[in-house]
Length: 115
Length: 115
Figure 1 (cartoon, each protein chain N blue to C red):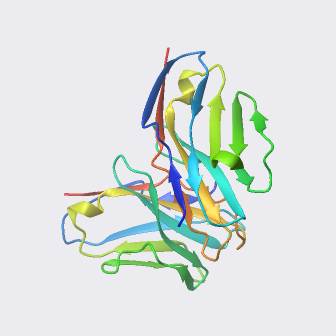
Figure 2: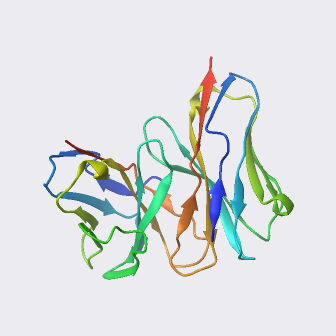
């Protein structure tokens, strides 16, 4: 069965600090997809990144970077030089190569960036 | 996630009433998903629909909940005889085609409060 764990319930950092949000997943499939979504205080869910299981290259997008390691079943998300606008709940999600498109979301990590 | 339209954004219902939540997918998307987010929890898959078909409803409660995506018009999530435990945020998402690992784009959510 598929499962996503985000062990950090809440994190507080001071502006300009770097912060890493952890995501550990479980799946029996060899083909699967990992996602990160951001939910700011306004409530909407914003897509950040999609990664398939065959692509272990790390990705950087501005201040955001993602570290995918199949050996540890982790897909961690780092924000460099955090800003107050980064304050949100961040969800990691897993989709297996199956019919139905059932995404499994982690419980989320609430990030507070203090000025 | 621009383009997935959900309404109403906020809905208050008394116990026993019906709640209807509407979702118009992004232009060109024919696949719709409903997720529920209970307070302080992650998102739970409810149902996956294509036009006029329910593909996967494994996450739908067996009673009182139903979903449809008619040939014309938005997808509707209907909750009959609401109870306090139905209070949650209901998110709709859409994707352009069926395929494992599709990115799904979310609407802004509909917050249901049952009083």
